[in-house]
Image (cartoon, rainbow, N blue to C red; front, top):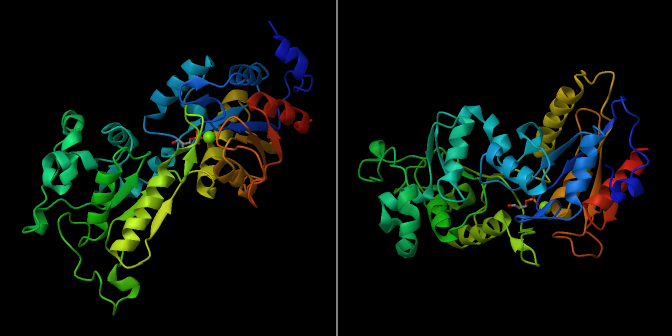
Length: 373
Ligand code: G3P
Ligand code: MG
C-alpha cells in the first residue's frame, strides 16, 4: 500500500535492483523524536527508504543506554525495524579504546549505573561511577544527602577505598569519561575536580605541583592526571519541552568555569567526541559502509557510495559536522537542516549553513532523493 504521501513525493527512487550510490545519516533527537514522541513524518520517511532499499544509519549525540537497548526503543517508537548495525550513539566509538580496557576508569553521566554497564559491555573491566564513590564516601559531597536513596541501590563496591594515608592502596583513576548528560552536576563536577587536582589520579590526594607558578599552566599539569573524555559537545538539544534544553555541553561549560576559578585560569586538556567532530563521522561512515555491504552483499568497489545526506536539527553538530567532514572513503556529505528541533530559523553561523532547510525529515528526504537524481 503506497500512502498518498509516497505517491505524491517519491518519483525519483532508484530503479529496482540497482545499488543506490547514496545513503542517509539521520540524527535522532529533534529529527525523528522529541524525547519519546515520534515526529510525524519520521515513520513514513524511514519506511519508504527501507522499501526502496536506500541505506541509512542513525547517528546521535545521545546515549546513556546500550546500543541494543536504545535502538530497540527507537524502533518501537517509530514502528520501523532498526538494529545496532545501523546505529551510532555518542559513546559508541569509545568501545574502540582497547588500550584503556584494563585500566580503571571513571564513567560519569546518564542514569546512575547504566553508563557503567554500557562501558563494561564495551570491554572496560574496571569501571567506577561518581555514585559508587559517593555511597562509599558520603562525606565527599556534603550536599548529596537528598540523593542518597537514588544512589544506594545502584552503587557497586569500589575496587579500592579512598585512603590518602596509603596512596598505594587508594583508589586510582586512569581516565575519566562523561558518557551521557550528567544528572547530578554537583557530584560529577566534584569528582572530576578531585581527580584533576590529584596526584596521578589517586583520589583524596593533591598534586604537589598545583599552583606552582614556576611551572607551565600554573603547575596544573596533566602529565600524570587522568585524561577527560566527553562523548557529546551539545550545548543544547531538542527534548519534549518546546525550547531547547542544556545538554552535555552545558555541563562541560559549567565545569570549565569551576576549573578556571579554582586554578586561576589554567588551561584544561580534554577530548570531546561526538558530532560535529571528524572521528565520529569517520566511525559513522565505516559503519554505514559495512551496513550497506550487508544490505547488498557487494564489496562496494564496483558500487561506490558517492553521497551521504546528513539530516539533523542542530546546526552546530549535525550541519557543521557534515559540512566539515573529509571522508577518507571518497564520499561527499550533504547537510539537511530540519525545523523540528534545536534550529529555530534565521541564518546559521558560518560553517554550519546547510545545503537545504526543510520543514521536517519527510521534506528533507524528498529533497535529497531529487538531489541524488
Ligand atoms: O543527549 C542527546 C542530545 O545531545 C542530542 O542528541 O540525537 O540530537 O544528536 P541528537
Ligand atoms: Mg538532534
